[in-house]
Image (cartoon, rainbow, N blue to C red):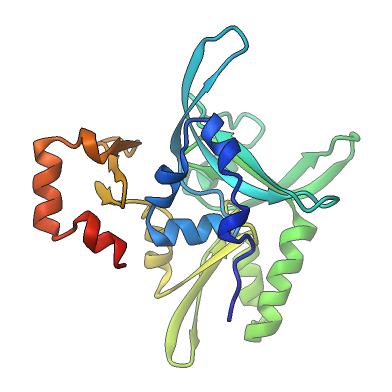
Length: 252
């Protein structure tokens, strides 16, 4: 049995709660999203709220991921806030075009000690942040993938150049591609490259009803949580039409 990187009882709800994300809100996320969170994925962009030292409340939107402290083993939360604008000035026009298409590119990165190293760069379209991971880290994971599926040098280069790769595995199509929002640095799905690309934006439906409330996505893709006691008539009607109720959710 494949185990998630983080167990349910390790999720630091007390930290998430300080940023306006209650345990009920997290548990009402779809199972595929919860699985991604348990696997260390930065996913999805959620509304957060925190109180400054002067008592002022700040409302924002951010992804978060779970990280394990290497020394003590404690699980921590890392937030990735949504930016108001994307900054790509460090890349040339061709690289900027590839980044805007969601592709990963290889370029230079300056480390904290001032050294220039090669790294994969990829634009997170939902937060407008440029994600950066040194090439040896992702390169090692890609090589493990290549060895497992007996990929050719050309196929491996396809992945390194930021293109998704589709192969036949036991008569089924499987597509792999670099996705720096994933803890491994790459993501796979059953199906072709088009499905792989679509999967990246399949975070949530317009209405995601849970046990305690509902996640609602607006026309711009922003998610907000509505407790059951605050449902509108329209939401009750949608829930009724979908055949979902609190009792049916409990049985899932």
